[in-house]
Length: 54
Image 1: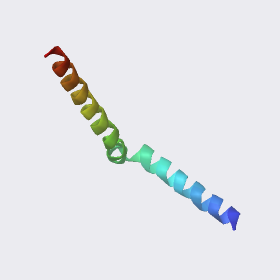
Image 2: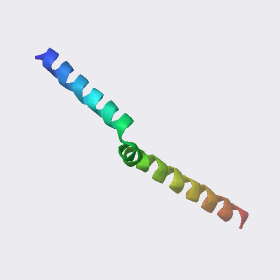
Image 3: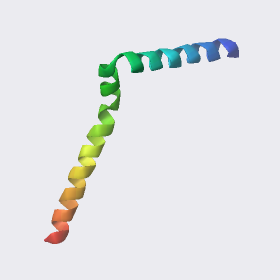
């Protein structure tokens, strides 16, 4: 039973890696939340600096 689980998880991981390599649009979609968070963090930082100045 555990062997079947390991095989299935390994196949899913390999499929994910293949899609990651072969489909740049998928890579962009997966990484989108990271860039959204970074943009919000930058906006927050700028806003905090403006409020500190007065």
